[in-house]
Image (cartoon, rainbow, N blue to C red; front, side, top):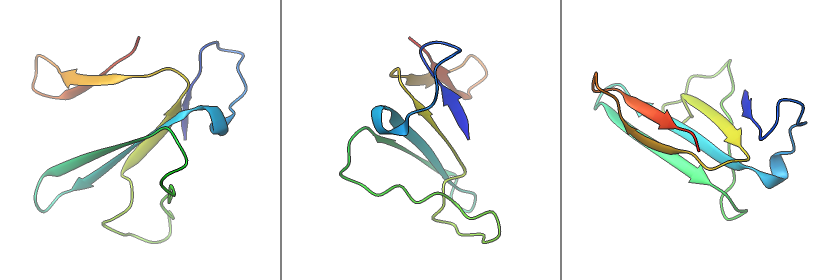
Length: 81
């Protein structure tokens, strides 16, 4: 699990952070980015022993908001504040 805090010495406290989860469907090429910053949705983390197409391919929490854009090579990139 990645952690991006405001300061390097910050201790992770997931209750005050935004969750960013990526779901990728290799059959269709579809990418879904879930951004959850409240308690309206349950976050189900993947079980490494069970392969499920509904699981997050990757995820992280961040205290600071991030946005996404397209890089020069056509890949999605994260833009940090």
